[in-house]
Image 1 (cartoon, one colour):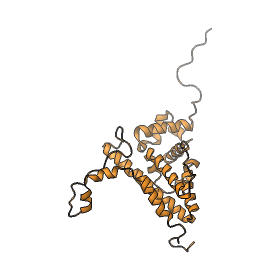
Image 2 (tube, one colour; image 1 turned 180 degrees about the vertical axis):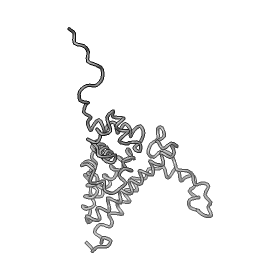
Image 3 (cartoon, one colour; image 1 turned 90 degrees about the vertical axis):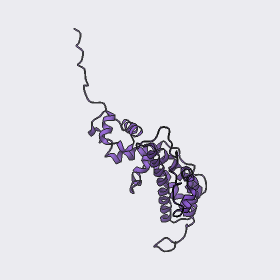
Image 4 (cartoon, helix red, strand yellow; image 1 turned 135 degrees about the vertical axis):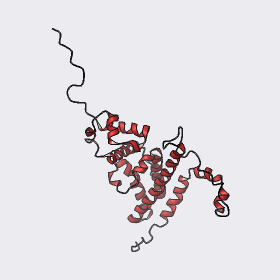
Length: 241
């Protein structure tokens, strides 16, 4: 006799869901809807698994975002750290800036202290390069930490201001079609009263064009030079090194 066909539908154990599949589904949500819409419930629906299945791979939404950042950092080429200490700091900070310009959501995720201990080796490589460059230049370890944190504040602030300005110009909270991180000027200042704001009024319509220019590299070099000029000087609240 011919064996009857098995009934339709899933039988046996469900297929295993890998960490790579979960992160791929999370990236699809990020690219399509933005990081604000990335929730565990939505990720489960995107991956086609039960919500509890995800907790075998991620602890919570924050852990998911950190895993995504580490995965993306693993794909980045390492910065060129062959120059003198100052040039190594600039190269590492530029690498960090360029990565965050492509993932502005990551900059916002990392705006709270305490995330360094959760970053992988690839992401920490940039932090290590900046701190090491500062120490090699003559900074104390404490000063080297201040150098890194100051550069971090400058970098993440620049990324978030430009990314949020771009979203506002799109008018719906999402990037405009074909927009880049540095596209579009700020509103004009041409209507200001010169008797109250004479210098801003004199700049007027030029403000938007000037504000849209990418001055991060120039500002970074000047910023690093100023930070390193304090190398070896007494630390605030402490004895001279």
